[in-house]
Length: 123
Image 1 (tube, rainbow, N blue to C red):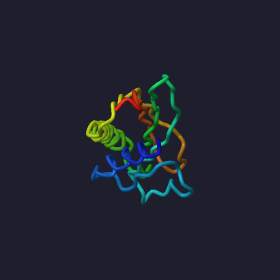
Image 2: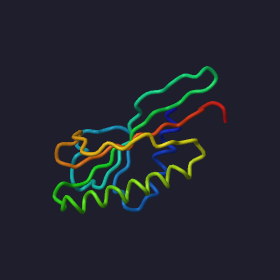
Image 3: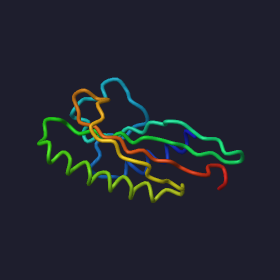
Image 4: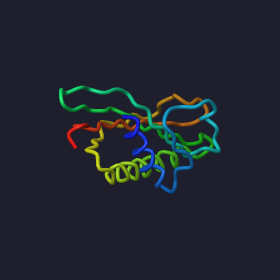
């Protein structure tokens, strides 16, 4: 499973506007110089006998010093770029939902994109 997270990180690292892309939250992640940042957070897996599904989050955060309307515009543009980047992987990745105004990072405005990779182990 960790190799899958690395593949996702690689796909997101190719997005030019992202300054920082990592797996998990590290101490000090909420420093505005890292923005926009993405963090890949595994949420859980679902066993289906011979295959498995992986649910993961991509947390996207922007510096709150920016104009809030511009921040939302930039978020939705980056959301589209993330979906496009994940489509380039060889996994079956489906967007579940987007949660706005997530307050995981106190100094930043964050949103969460939730995804599911299906049928891991059948490839």
